Length: 185
Length: 185
DNA sequence: GTAATATGTCACAAAAATGTGATATTTAAT
DNA sequence: ATTAAATATCACATTTTTGTGACATATTAC
Image (cartoon, rainbow over all chains, first blue to last red; front, side, top):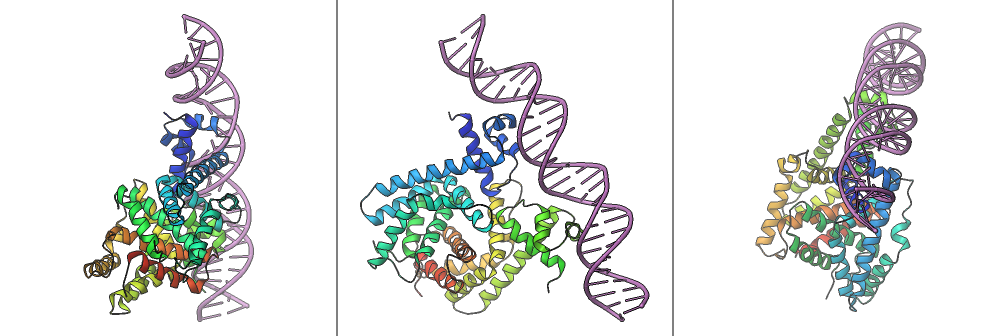
């Protein structure tokens, strides 16, 4: 069974996903822990949030890096990265959301995605496929990047909401992404 | 110039989009109005939120119904609905977000989307296109519906974040959606 | 069984957010 | 210019949320 700190982070990610300022009583409750205990592990709300971000980012980067390295074929690399992100579920959604939030609000800076090289690796593959005419050039790379994230999020939410069976969602996501960017396999 | 109530709703939509519990002081400030005035127009936070939802839903439904009726060809109907949603910008994003949020949290019920017939109209077109084999049948209709929303949201956010030029985003969105569902025009 | 560690319970102070009354000031209409 | 309506400012009570101390209870390791 997971240790307390992990349980709290998991609960916080779940709570903060759709409401970045859900109160800590609720988080503690979801974690099955008293609020006092939560405060023993995390100095304050900010601290908890920072830990969530770091933890989720590490998880996602690890999973996607492994996916990247799981195959030599660039298309399969991308496909496996998509699958890995979907499997991360709300871990991925949480990161994506906090990244989006920081775009609008002045304060935070989003070095996070930029700093690691998962994005860079992904971009390189897409740029190459585009170079080789295996991907439409009617779309820009930034658009394709955003689209990739959006399709992952769609898959995650569709499963959570019960709209699409867990088994189907990865398949659907890959079909959709391939079609959307005109990828020839 | 817009009247005060409208200004406040616009500000609230902007504030609540990424943080459903942004404080009312901030909302008032963004609206360029005192908090006291905000409270004169809205009984309380709940009331304001309800007004935002209603207002945004009306805007979006109106725009998308007009788009639906703007052409006889079903494919152009869908395309124009996509464009209309993108033009709605954060109006659409706000509705989509509150709809998503209510999926996870127990309390709220999302009769909103269901009750109006915009969704029904959209679904009918897609079902027919699928019947006629003009859309892949490797994807389910609910998936396609979610994807449609996700691509719209991507376009809106891409513009807000400055990733994609305002002019391009509608074009990109349509290309992507067509490709994703294998639509033959 | 005992000591050490972790957690729960309760109380409480401080801070933040909410909602409202009273009154002054601004704005618009005539 | 005068009046009416809308808004701002300020003060205040209430509620909600946060963070911490003190102590009890439970869990674990030995």
